Length: 164
Image 1 (tube, rainbow, N blue to C red):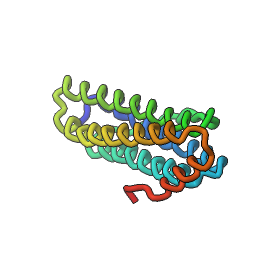
Image 2: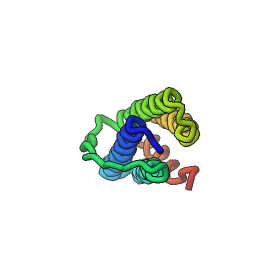
Image 3: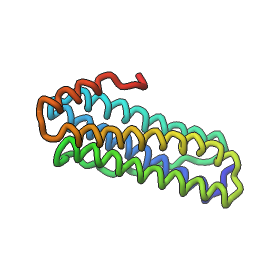
Image 4: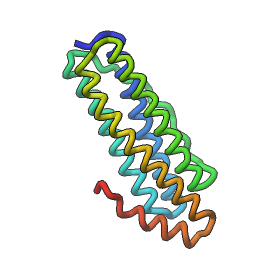
């Protein structure tokens, strides 16, 4: 059984994961508006992944006899200064998610909640990959600069996302 403190913290993380999904869906729409289907597809796949993360925690809370309580999801940003700025926001956001997961893990340690620690280990590993991918995207977009031809070539590359 989950403690009330852990249950509340996990419910908060579910909200954060759903916000992440919503943010990436908004970014997908932004890239679609720029006729950048590769980046739009990448963000849509990221949306799906974040939604899966929320469901994973949702199921875990239920499996442990807890009560999932959903909260309102904040509206995501819809306009970005540039494609690079959007990708930089992805990196910043993933770093915030990493910090949130680490905070949950620290709580699980303090409460000697070994099952939650084990579940969160998967998320810790996942965040290493998320940050690595975001850093790579930011670096690629920095290299592309404002050159439209280079941006189109780069965007076309994203239609072939590795995890599909």
